[in-house]
Image (tube, rainbow over all chains, first blue to last red; front, side, top):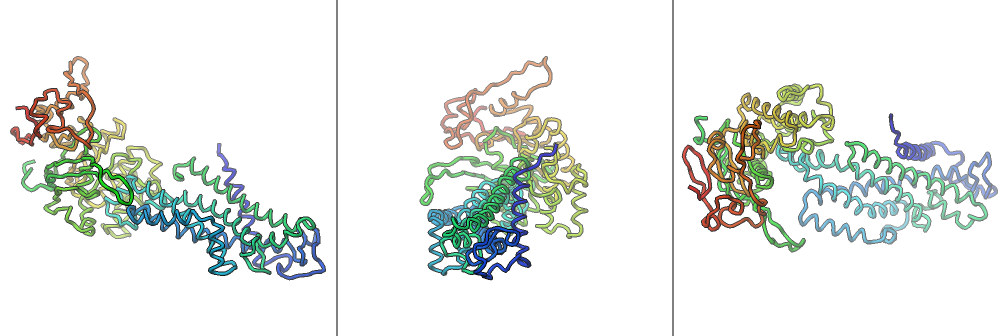
Length: 272
Length: 326
């Protein structure tokens, strides 16, 4: 009997749905997401405006689709750059060991001990508000997380006999790190990446909510929530639908994580 | 083995390996040392198999790793074809890897689970540019054939093989560089008894075919007896007896060797064995006993054993033992 990895399937479907809607928005949205039509302000959901309109009469469905571009791009770029930088540093620390390891990991712990919101506000004072600042802030917050997880995996994997065998046949340190250790550490790193991705979506929303993220009139999911918060009682659809978009993405990413973990515990190729 | 001792392939001189035990992180200081290998010397002639036998934790695997330069010796030297491997640069040591290889004990841990059999065997070919890229597959098929595996299996991953098959893959990887000398680090200890014989016989056939020299590390005396020309017995980081196989098995000089040999089961219920039972455990290598390291468990212990460390002594017929008993 074939077992279906339900979290993996549902998680992937959620993310595929969100990503494809966002990709479609590059070429097509029902209405122009930034064009205002004041006379149509606060139209409740109908056949024309499926999710209704906001205070300026902008179509909410169109804004959610286009806002996904910002939200997903920020989360993806921030997490992948945090992952690349953090994992490289962590891999070096774990493989080389010694004093370098001590220094790098102490730095990571200092970075880790700052609340990520504080880091973000620090980034804002340095780089000003905007999309790039949010990306940088989230990336920096992710670096120590990936450093730790990669370093710990490298530390234990470098003692494996197949690493010693590779040394015995004369493999260089680079080859050992990339061909022997990294592929075996990758599942754990990827699980962390999907955890970080959902956190990054929420972080982008919170930062845009306090007003340091994407600049108006361009939409992002967090930005939409911020703009609509004073009208939540009057026109609840203005907050409900962006909220649902965030929820689906975070849920999808979390389910994907669980699915990957399950795959890891069941199959010898994915030891996490 | 007529040319034994004339031009040894490998010469180990007063080899010492201590693993330091440190305390503290930034300002660490040494608080002790595990004396894994403590002043051992031996030679291996070309084409010979030297068996190295001893209990778990006596330092026999460490000897193999130091010889290959996988861990640095604390002092002493290892000469391979006259070259001191401790003095080689990183580049020269890498070149030497072509001549010296290792087969590991655990066939489940010694193959990278993310690489196919083909990738595993191709790696040494790639690193040392043994053959052209376009000849890789022919060479890999040949190697698999030599170790008795079907070449159609080369796209598979290690977890799809049994323990014996995995060990054959490990052997093929070691053979890929055309080595002269192979350290066999308990290559059959993790295998079923029926598979052990196959792998030992394979190693013997390969030795004949390619003129290999082995350092065969094991704790199983019957396996050692089957494959070795000479045997060295280790106890707590020291070699206590070293002799030709027949000499050692028929006329053991050291009480420790005698005790080990008496423990080999004889497949005949009629034979009464005079088993020598040793008391106590192996002492800690962090703080080994004074004098002869075996004195705490020796049935023939004398006063001198506790005070003076016995030297390796020729008992005739190139039979060396380190014991005060005459």
